[in-house]
Length: 208
Image (cartoon, rainbow, N blue to C red):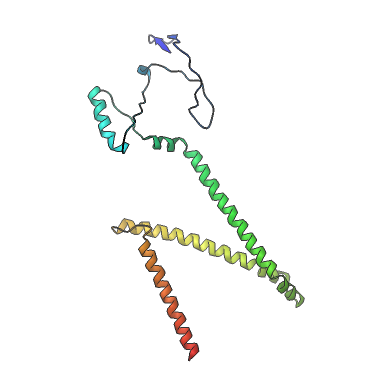
């Protein structure tokens, strides 16, 4: 569409009509008017080989050689543009996956507790026959689930604290990564060694 003059009511000249084009994955095609480049900013796509970010300075120099008055407002790769466009969808997918994992964990916890209670049905009957109270039976059946829940909470908190500590150490010490396999291997080996020493001491005391 071309315009004539700069008056408040310019004359419009339609030079062509094109088909609908979907530019957004969240909604359908919208009414769009294409105007000449002189009325708006332009966007160019470049096909490059290798790292496109390494060519950013060369592109700016090339544009400056064509016309020093031209300037580039923003440069981004196709991957960055895709990430910017669908970040909401990725966020929803990530949250859905997390809630799915939470639901799966709850189902697994329920199944484990139900299996434990089913195995102790005879024991529960014997306890009730000997006069066990209702709240004692409830505590007996709920204890397994509470223990597993507390263990899970402790593990999550421990992982969060460990991640924070490792990142803090990474900022202080050169060459320390948050997930250094040798550090974790040494920690596990030290814990296993201490555990074996305790078992050996216990066996020696029993033998004596």
